[in-house]
Image (tube, rainbow, N blue to C red; front, side, top):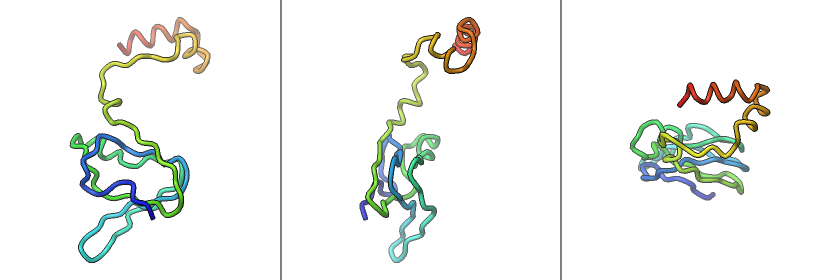
Length: 109
């Protein structure tokens, strides 16, 4: 069983479990308390995102061979970011006119 995250580990990341199966648990000297079982396509470590201290409150281990992607928490703390899609792309994805998307983006700025 491979351990992804150790409790109280300082890490500005959270995990996306893209395949496999993992457990979220807390450990004491003599026992282990499994908090939940995480199937594929789930995010682990969001509490670190909102707590502001980047410390995981629990440990995570894989039950089977798993693929995990690390996502930097600081991406979500940025006040601005570069849009990789054009306004036209947003309009086509959302079923709106380009003008409506432009108005909505201006309101959000």
